[in-house]
Image 1 (spheres, rainbow, N blue to C red):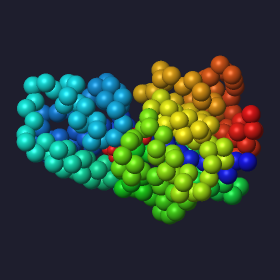
Image 2: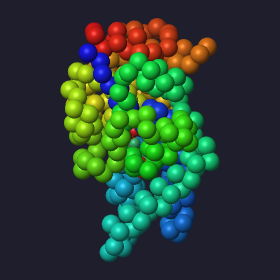
Image 3: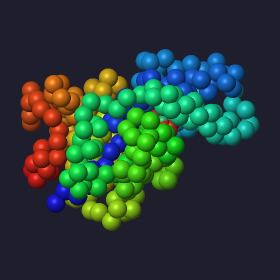
Image 4: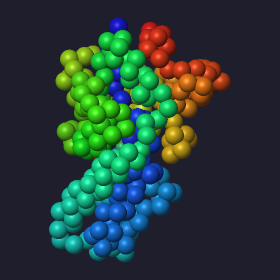
Length: 252
Ligand code: XBP
Ligand code: MG
C-alpha cells in the first residue's frame, strides 16, 4: 500500500539550480575575491557532482589546474559554502524561486488524502526550510514528516543512503513509498533504495538516462497545462499527477 511520497528538492520541487544555487555560488566566489565564475553551461557540467562542497572541489580539480590551493583549502571550501548558503537563502526569502507546476497542488492533495510527505535531498537543510517557507507556505516545513538533507549521510546521491535514512526515520519500507526526482543521480539513489520513482525533467536533465523510472514527465501538470509523458511506456499521454494516478502507477 502507498503510504508516503518522498521528494527530491533541487530541480524537482523548484528549478533552483540555474537561477538559485549557481548565482549564490558566484556571489560567494566574488565575496572571497576569487575569479571563479560559473556560467549556465559550465554549471550543467558541474551538476555531475552532487553537493555544493563536493562540487567546488570537483571544479578546482577538473577545470582550474592553474589555481594553487592554499594549505587551508578545506577550511576555505567550508567558508565559501557557508557564504553561498547565506546568498541562496536570501534569494529565497525575496520570493525568488517559485515551485514547479503542480507541486503545490499535489502536496495539498496528498496531505488531504492522508499520505505522509518527506524530503530526501543532498542540499543543505536551511535551503530546504527556506524554500518551503517562502515558496510553499509559512508552515511549509511542517507539512513534511521528515526532511533528510545535506551531510546527514556521508555518501550523497547517487548513493541510496539519504532515502534509506528517510525511510528509517518514518519506519516505512520501500514498497510503501514513491519518490520524485529530476536527475539521473537522484533516480539512481531512489532506485538503489528500492523505491519506485516518478521523474519530472528540466532543462539540465532532459538528456539523462531515466531507465527504471515508473514514469518520465515534463512536470506534474497544472490546471490548463497538463504534463506530457516522455517515457516509452506512456509516450504522448497528458494529464495531471494526482493521488489517484500515483496509486494506480504504484500498483503496477
Ligand atoms: C542537489 C545538489 C545540491 C545543490 C547545492 O542534488 O546537487 O548540491 O546543487 O546544494 P539533488 P548545497 O537534487 O539530486 O539532491 O550547496 O547546499 O550542497
Ligand atoms: Mg534534483
